[in-house]
Image 1 (cartoon, rainbow, N blue to C red):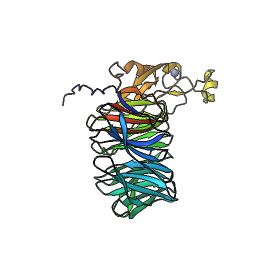
Image 2 (spheres, rainbow, N blue to C red; image 1 turned 90 degrees about the vertical axis):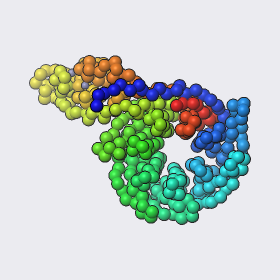
Image 3 (tube, protein in one colour; image 1 turned 30 degrees about the vertical axis):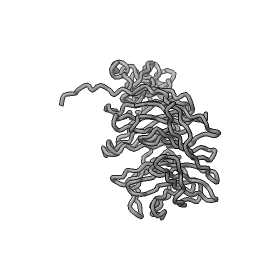
Length: 395
Ligand SMILES: [Zn+2]
Ligand SMILES: [Zn+2]
């Protein structure tokens, strides 16, 4: 098939649509209500609030509920789950009335002996997946509240995703590892683990169509794990200068949205063929000019030359000296949206077309603690350390 140049989908420049500034404390989780101009927020002031957009364009509170004790995390969905302490952590399910003017606590479940880190509600299975400080990953029946199974994780879990079709759970933890588990009704088996980050996994995002998992980390990077391809391909995405805080995928436009704690929002075009970064090669001397590196005393002595510092070309992976890698370039298809070190010959080989960015960079102008993308409206919600929620039109 002849190669055809496809126009890259253009992201709409994120335009700020609304702000909600009424909070005493940081909003640790919030969602846009699908198909409604509404937002549900959970704030550290212990309130769950529903906001509806009025004709003026402003969000006004519709209903709120104050929790009896400090909560730690939440996951809204068809109904609405929240976890709080009384004295052990419990999950509280709320039912919202159709007009969003009434919020009724319904079921209460208990699943952990310590603080809960992530909750995921799987409507199709009627499962509630959760992880906690007790290092247990549990799944419960959301109808009966009965615990179905448990798995002991290696570290505190900070990211959780689930594939309904194959019943695989993806569990990202503070050691930087992602564990894949196959869940049965009452048992689970370990499929594999992925190790790629040098920092904590802070966010996971699963695209069930392309069968790709994205993991974001405190090491500023995102890794795209090609699960469906079964070749173990892992592609790095380097576009943040701070901890990655959230990941969302817009499957209809094949765009990944990522945010970091410095307020940066990056919209990645994933409708391009990306390449894996090369392994770094080992050498005692520069693989271009053959000058010895500084630990190669024998060659230094023999050639009476002072050793050089070793660097690596990000494109070919060769070990090179500073003189042979004096140029910098972006390599967007390898995930390097910022300039990185390349050897002189690779620099020659990178065309202007190769340097065309595959991302757009945006500034949310607040330190993002939580992000939510709503595909039906194409709107993105960010909650910041400044106690403000912003809703932007993105895609
Ligand atoms: Zn050299
Ligand atoms: Zn090179």
